[in-house]
Image (cartoon, rainbow, N blue to C red; front, side, top):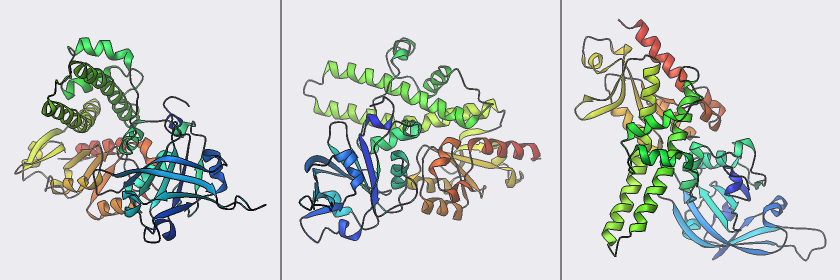
Length: 404
C-alpha cells in the first residue's frame, strides 16, 4: 500500500460491460457475474464469500443508490480435471434492480478484503470517470479487465480523483498538518472567508508562476487549497465534537448540515478566486459576479459590465465565462446568462464528461474550458474541441486587443 495512490483504497480492481444475462433480475433471486482467470490475482483461487457494498450511479441523481450484501467467488468447474469457469454470485439488491444490460460494472477489493461493486449507467459521465480513475481505457469489453498493481504514476490520487472516490463513499484521508498551527494562529481558530483562504493557499505554493503555465498553476492552487481546507476542517470538527451536543439532536443536525453546505459552496468559490487571480496576473480586463439581466449574474464578463450594458458596444467583442467545479446538468444554467453574448464559455474541473453532454454543449454554442491535465480523461474526438485555460486567456486577450 502506497500513501496517496489508488493502492491505498483498493488491492485490485476489475471492470466490464454488463451482459443482459448478468443484469436480468427477473431470472432468479440470485445472480452471477461471469469471471475470468485473471481475477484470481485479486480474489484468490479458493471459493470465498466476501462482504460487499453495492453502489449504482448515474448522472441525473445527486445521491447514489446503495445496498449491502455479499459476493461469492468460486469455480463452477472445480471438480473438472482440466477446465475452470470462475463466477461471482450476488443477491438481489437495490442496486441490481437498477442495473441494465450495457451498464458498466466495476469491482474493487478493499484493503480489509471487503468488496465494492459499482454499476454506472451506460454512457454516463460518472462511468467515464470511474474508468479513468481505475485505469481502464475507453474500450468497454464484455469480459473483465483486471488491474492488480495500483501504484503507478497514473494511480496517484489528485484533485479530481478525490471527488470521484468520495462519491463512492470512500473518504480520502489526506492532510497538510505542517500548516495547521500556522492556520489556527492566522485565522484565530476558525474558518476565514473564502477569498482570504484562497489567498493563503496560493501563498503556500512557492514553485509555480501564473505566467508560465496557467493550467498547471490553477490545478496546483486548487489542490493545495483543498488539502489545507480538509486539514483545518478536520481539526475544527474534532474540537467541536469534543464539546459534545448534550442530547441536542437538532443542534447536531444543524452543525452537520452546515459542514456539508460549506464544503459544496467553498469549492466553486475557491475556483472563481483562483481564476480571478490568474486574470489579474495576465492583465485581462474583467468584472466578476455582475448582474447582466434581471437577477441573472455571470461569473466573469469581459472586458467588463460597462461594455456589456452599453448597447453601442459591439457584442462580438464581449465574452462571458461561467465557472462550475462540476458540470452535471448545471451547465445548462450558463445558457440563460449574459444574453447579449451568443457563444458562451464554461470552465470546469470535471473529468471525463460524456460525449453526449459535450455534443449537447456544442449544439447550444457552449465552449467547455478544462485545465490541460484533465484533457487526457476525454476522448480523442472531444480533445479536438476542448479549450484549456491558456487558450482561453489568449482568446480574451486577443479580443481585448482588437476591440474598439
